[in-house]
Length: 353
Image (cartoon, rainbow, N blue to C red):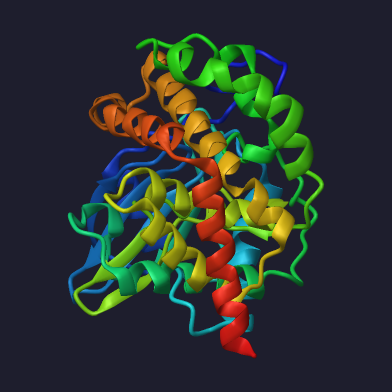
């Protein structure tokens, strides 16, 4: 879609809107569970936190009616694979229905079918709610993400080639539909970067090793507690893409929105490469990938706001932070940051010897 125009439905930013009482009935029918449903934000799925009368918690997800069944199976299969391959990694587990199925089918008033799933609840608070970065947490977050990538090195699925707008390797950042923004920040910050992305960054990125990756480890999906890093949620953006992309996404925040980007960026990369070694050519491109992710984030958030996304108020509230992140990244010395990244992975290599 890099040269194509599109609308919100093309990107499947259209979660269902089932009434809570209907979902409660379907939960009891299909999972035998009764409890309180609290709405959660969702870009593509309708999400609710379920709390049962005995205090257990789950996450209810209803996929968009336009979502391909194969993609839903892809997401479920990834969770099952990681549970088998790396059971200590704290991620959601897919809960079976009463009949032993991975999901239930529900219908709206017009008879259209939707996939309803139930996931285990991962305890903790989003890293983004923390005011002061914790060095141990950032290192452990990198170590966790690298371990997750390692667990998925031997995973494959028929739907792994599906289109996901958040896959930076797809070049969605170049789309004409994302070049005009409501607030003018795309024109000011992103457009000057597009030639570099198209002619240099994307060709190199797509020459690197690929596998299934989480692709969404931003600070709202990384969970922490007073004890440290807790786990990772939201596997709705998984893709088959370059491995280095999975490190770039959280680094965009740790480098772009901390008071010491060199230190925190190095710590995260040390942790990541502790679990999964990275290559020199991947590190050489990493700074550009931070710019690419930050640019696409501004574009897609602005696009959702322009298209009256149901989470529009929250998106507008968070938008200045995204702009600041890209501004900060642009202001950094690329060679200095890249040197720190190389030193971080060399440190882990020397520790293994």
